[in-house]
Length: 92
Image 1 (cartoon, rainbow, N blue to C red):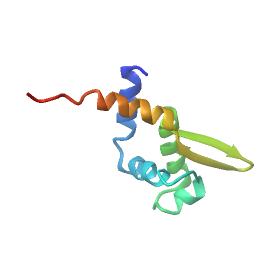
Image 2 (image 1 turned 90 degrees about the horizontal axis):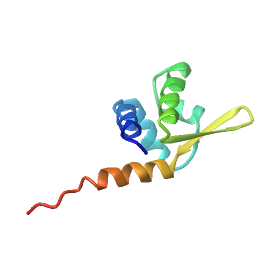
Image 3 (image 1 turned 90 degrees about the vertical axis):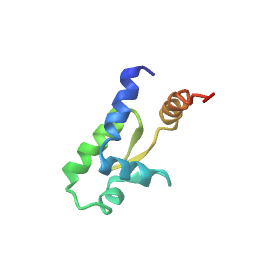
């Protein structure tokens, strides 16, 4: 991943709705309808947030018939967490 990728993830997670969506997906894949039930937003607004989360690579979208299921992209998350962990500076 590049610095631009890390910055995009940070920017994407800089919204409380997207943070809540990410938190909800920690328990497993969910369809858009399940996510939408937890918010007081419209379907187009949810679609916008999901586009941001999938565009940065943090969330996978898988179409199953007329439903789209969203899940955390563990590989991207692991790479991002490794980057953040590498900033762990030992104090003297």
